[in-house]
Image (cartoon, rainbow, N blue to C red):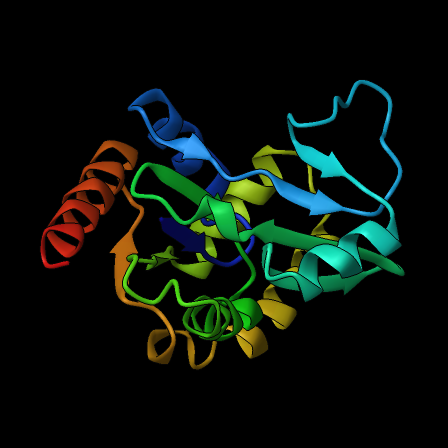
Length: 181
């Protein structure tokens, strides 16, 4: 399983989409929030109730759980497979790996990648996607704090200056790591 993390504007979603084009499956998170217009169950999320979510956690069916806006989000323990990729927040990496060990899934590889992009480039990317300057400034400040020790929790750092090179590097490192099983 590949887990991508990176600051705002680092290209995580773009890389995930490229990995999907090359045969990786996107891990689908579970959530207790309501479906938004156009969303389908089992596409972007598996929609569930809080009781169902808590039962899944208690039964070891979730690797991670997080709360945002009074709703729960979590990734299924069934997602740990060689052909799966997902995006997570930096705060959850250690928890995901620890939970996998607790559930006896430690022998299956979870390979974590920090997608590194200089702040100036990330700012350009966020401007191009329509983010406001105020929003960008706030994101950069939050990211500076959240990612200050990122290299201590990830397996690899990949520079995302050329998309094709970054994707190829992730696939290469994932395969090499899985061969070491």
